[in-house]
Amino acid sequence: MKDIGIDLGTANVVIYVKGQGIVLNEPSVVAIDSDTKKVLAVGNEANEMLGRTPGKIKAIRPMKDGVIADFDITGAMLDHFIKKAIGKRILKPRILICCPSNITQVEKTAIVEAAEHTGARKVFLEEEPKVAAVGAGLDIAKPSGNMVIDIGGGTTDIAILSLGGIVNSESIRIAGNTFDNDIVKYIKDKHKIIIGDRTAEQIKKEIGTVYDSSKEETMEVKGRDAVSGLPRTITVTQEEIESALKEDAMKLVRATKSVLEQTPPELSADIVDKGIILTGGGALLEGIPQLLKEELQVPVFVADSPLTCVAEGTGVLLNHLELLDN
Ligand code: ADP
Ligand code: MG
Image: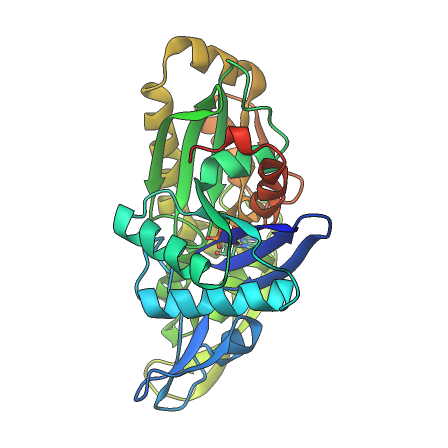
């Protein structure tokens, strides 16, 4: 009997199958026919359609801001991914799903029902920070404080853990997508060029930084001239992108500070010693660890595989079901 773990992220879904490891890693995107509401494509295939779809085909991210925008579509996406990951051979697996920490009870129930619908024997739901911590290799069962910041696409989860539980946490809507939007806005305001979200994400990954860009890298960017409406190519510098991202990066720093300020002193002392661990794709944004380290004066580390460590964490927890809440 195989158990499976699912990282149901706002940007990506990653699935872990016990005994096999990570078997699926695709964007959480669904393409639908907006007239009939029929699902046309899911994951990689649907992602290719984002921003490039003709009239009635709509590519959407059903989990976009860490809340479930559409239950039916989320259910269809989950169903598609589970079937793709395990095929039809496995009978009644146990499924551990890791969801954004700020979703409501109604949303939780909807996710569990969607997973049960695929034939699961038992569905466990666990909050992301705990699973991310475990996936990053932290021993959360000890009476010692650990701090994790998971920077995803739609949300950043900041949490202090001890004795297997979350002591204090906050989920904010400043994450990877926010930085993409900052870049879109900057290029529009400064260069009068309209670019799409995917181009902005590319710029972020290639030359984006939030800390002291002394390297002065540049990048050619193609977009649509806001005035003439014609395609145009411009060159943007790393320094410009840093200025575009800085304000929201500092909001993330301040949210982290406020979580630290509300933390019991003994646990704070542990964090000064052990540092903060960063997970989620946003941890790969250049300068994030340096900025947090400088502003908070504590050591900051990036997990080995920030994009897959939540799924790895589900793998560990499936072997230690006693660590789960439900
Ligand atoms: P979620 O858990 O919400 O699905 P992920 O942990 O998969 O999110 O992270 C997705 C986010 O990470 C996206 O906003 C993406 O742009 C960002 N990201 C991925 N790789 C990089 C990189 N190399 N540099 C900066 N951001 C990155
Ligand atoms: Mg995530």
